[in-house]
Image 1 (cartoon, rainbow, N blue to C red):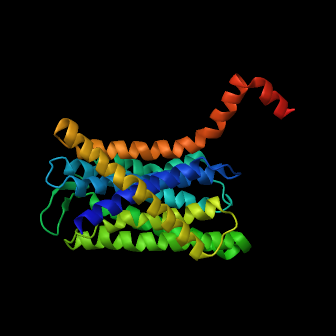
Image 2: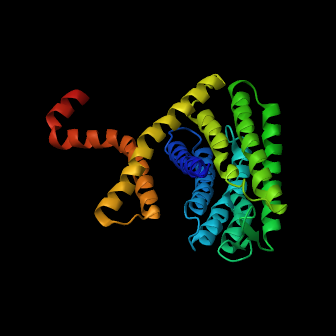
Image 3: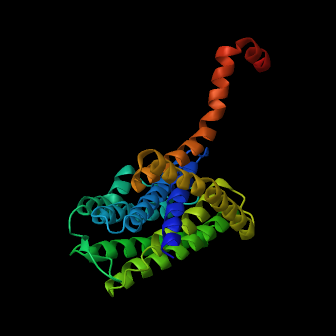
Length: 305
């Protein structure tokens, strides 16, 4: 079960990071929506990675640092969701830069407080993983209220929308409902009762929202939910078959060559491989075009003509 938690959090981190990059570079008319969603997805990735490190480094004195970093990055999720809910699906509301900065002010404040003992004061024992500081309740209020307001605006937009836009909002609403209901329960209500052993589920469930919304952005004409689940399952299995053996090989190589294993270094290397895999397909067409123009100029000019 412990290994399953680590793997679930690690792959949730990769999925959130990768889908955020995919949407960020997605060509389209609504760049502001793409950027806002990418910030939201990367905040989810940071939250997931922070909790991954907490479970991965059990017994290590750096756990408290990673717990605080998880809360620091998750501070951007409520503000990112609210801005996204106001804009999605067709930037029907105009948000000035000043308004967006105003929405993100609480996130910036909690980001600044996260390295201190204001949100997570110390490590716990048993079912209580952390002891929370005096600002944790305000962090919880900020999270719940922003998500509630975001749902309110999504509902208003849904009532005015028709056709494909209406379906896209429905996917967004469903994904956020699955994520928010699990995260609020396992990461706010249960910890207030002294139960923290389920708090890995909140970061993991972010893949539902990020995955659903990515699909609705990338595919303007939404298909059946079965196709979404089939594609999502395919990508997850591919990640497992590619990156789990790579991770084990990196650990084995360190043991053979250095007689020592650094798990943090191994995670960084696998994350770097994942990033390179994504960027390879992004820059491949431009690289091919540049090589043709420089090394095969006559052939390139002929084909252009």
